[in-house]
Length: 342
Ligand SMILES: C[S@@+](CC[C@H](N)C(=O)[O-])C[C@H]1O[C@@H](n2cnc3c(N)ncnc32)[C@H](O)[C@@H]1O
Image (cartoon, rainbow, N blue to C red; front, side, top):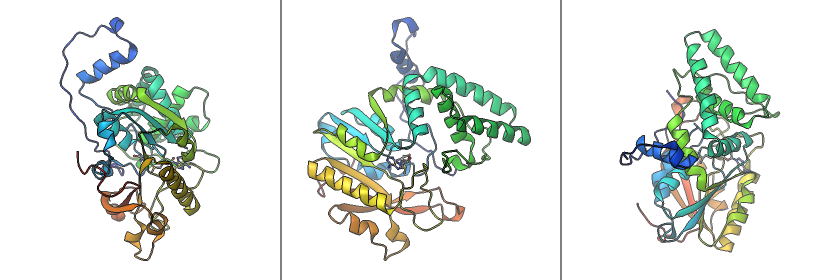
């Protein structure tokens, strides 16, 4: 069973009947046509700690009114697997441009490759999938194959497409779909125990590639996204969570730590956006639900609206503690100005 839930809502589109003549279409029009025929909309292509699929319904209730009325830019400075990004791209027609950012270079390289070289990526993933399935019943050979690919990934090949394919392969086959690197930026998650994991989800890669055509993809610190802000824009922040306890939470996505000082830096950035008149929504763990006296976020965001919501969280060292947890949704919108439901 997957430790990270991936039950993303698939929306079915009407079947389109036509003979596809590749020569008549641009590359992406062709993919679009194919994806319509397969009834697929883009969804996250990775398992990712802190993925926000479980929280989308609650987030959707906080969307500002303008996202339904005005063309706007959506900015997600901690994109991870992009659960909210893909939901927005699929569901909000007034979203004309999106900007996504993450500090994780391997992750951002994969987004860029899916956007620009989906066919080549699919070819490599298909080969990896065939090879992995061949050794599936021989646990020694399977392990050897996994660690060989992990070493190849850590050698950080020049070929960015191969690197992206290895990133997806490792995400699909490693323990719990975790991404963890050591101080030398070497991926060090051991092999997982999934049976016949999907390594090449061709239709989704094509759908994601299409969807990313209106997305600017940036690799850096969250503060660098400010330059993309404009009159109608919405920021959604999903930073690494403040751990609920010493052992309970996973928040190590890169070699840089996201500690309390980083949480404060993020709050200062949010204050700055507020002063500049930009709208934002932010999620984080509700540390108060674990310890009533922990007022960290209540004090940090005292000037803004704090909502407490339930979400299912499943990355936890202790399987008994994977369950319903309180999450915080914070926004600088004045209460009742956001649209309550879709
Ligand atoms: C909780 S995850 C985001 C999960 C995402 N919402 C999803 O649905 O998968 C936090 C992300 O922040 C990234 N990150 C950590 N420090 C960062 C920084 N200083 N600037 C930008 N991104 C950062 C991590 O690499 C990680 O992907």
